[in-house]
Image (cartoon, rainbow, N blue to C red; front, side):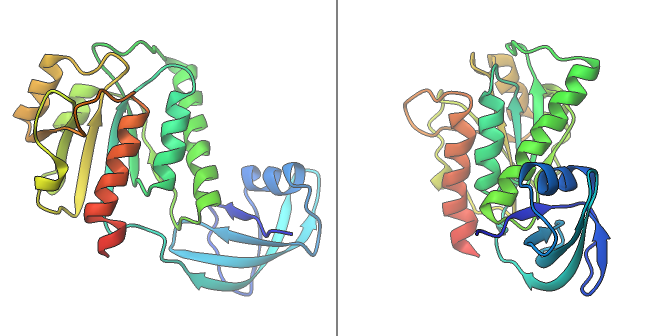
Length: 244
């Protein structure tokens, strides 16, 4: 039986017992239907995997004992932050899942001039929580040591203005000739990805005025969920996973 890997927000210490948080307990006890004596692997973002044994399962809680820890080396040396204008349907779900697998550090859902998705109040909070759970599940599956942060939804102009000076800002669109291969390797990159209808000329110009570099992935127009995945794959090859 494959040993499941579970994220928990709890502090993990060797030779101690802890009660898993509600989400982890529900997944282990109700979804996986695991019982006392079963083995699981826990991680909480501190860079290690923890071998644990289930001590007790009740209707609402799961208690485990922490038996061993192993340092993981699954995180990229390149910090990446995607600003993605919200897409319709399950396209954002797909983007978050695959970007997590590709090592993204942080994702901010954005609203823009051509954004067709309108979320407010409880709907917005529930959607962000849903996206965060997708990132958690993807990190569990792919062996990542950390779960990328899914930030609250933000207007595109605010996100662009908040770019730290130590991040390389890239605005991805096909109406430019600038290639990723011509850029100097950064330690951090901030990627601006538009919606299905693309970024407007004024949004691109505003990003460029705030030190974002217009960059292309080639002559073809990518779908909104394809662009971040293609970009992450290329920059991990150029600057991240294969340059550590």
